[in-house]
Image 1: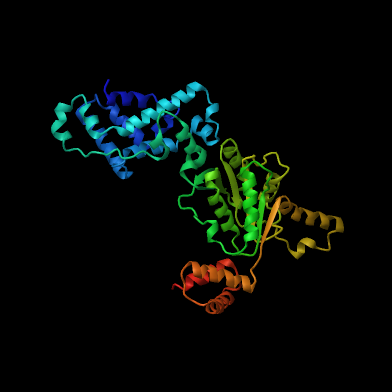
Image 2: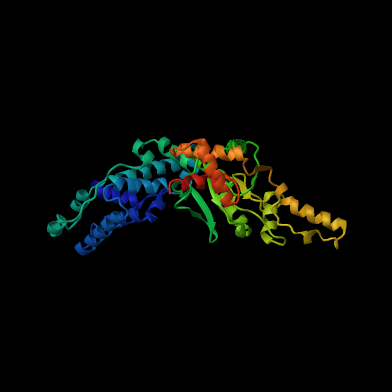
Length: 411
């Protein structure tokens, strides 16, 4: 049995990693191999479709990368167990099947155009045309498959560090149209980009570390003035701990009613999740207000152990309150009940971190640090004067205002 025929049979019988045959390149490649005994027109059509596809995918010179990448991002019983660091708990026969699948994938990724053409049953009939066909190059494998030597250790380590399925491929997610959708262009901000608010950020970092280590931790509310870095802190924390198995899923406030569906989707996954709610506030009689209260504490559909809720808000108590809500027409007992209802949601966040407007001195320090980082050659006095004038025009000091001022110096 030659190499091409053996590869075709191995690919056809993939088991644990069978999901990769739903991916475009492996699927088209197997279709090409399955056409080796077909009429010349059918074989050449399959060859042309395959080459067109790998050209579009920019992998005509790295077929091995395309094949092994499909495996790295596949979700199956092995990848889920490996992501949780428990792949050795799988039955021995399953692990044997994984090794066999990995070997089949590597064999397929190493096949050359010449080997495939020479294995075609009617090659002599198409030889003149075959010599003009474009060829592909195998190139190198992706990530841990470069080091696959029959042991699953290196492959499993990749999943442990990067997760499985789409959570290995992408870094951030959003709840949209009733499902978790990847964010293709996510915010890459990291902790080194911040100046000021060290105490606040450290509280969030410590809470996140405790969560990842399985220690006591809390849902967190970051509240305070606009432009102080609340949302950026959450995104930076998610970026910092991605290698530790942390993912972030943002859910819009207006879709909090979908929260039970969201947690059902992530509850059985081996990664840990920050469920991010940005710019949170409610009007009275808002249905999502009751939903979030139940999720935070006391509801049947509570958050799973592998998820924390991080929310940001410009309001400490989250519910917009008007003077009419405290009307003297209502007796004292009901007034107190109404106030307790308004306070009960924010009280259910175990950790509340305040981000307030910086003082003038702190504002200048932030501006100077940003200017130095960007190589702006101005004295502290010049920066302070310009920043103060800019802040007055913007309506107040904040780290966001400081960043906008520094960026305006390049205009």
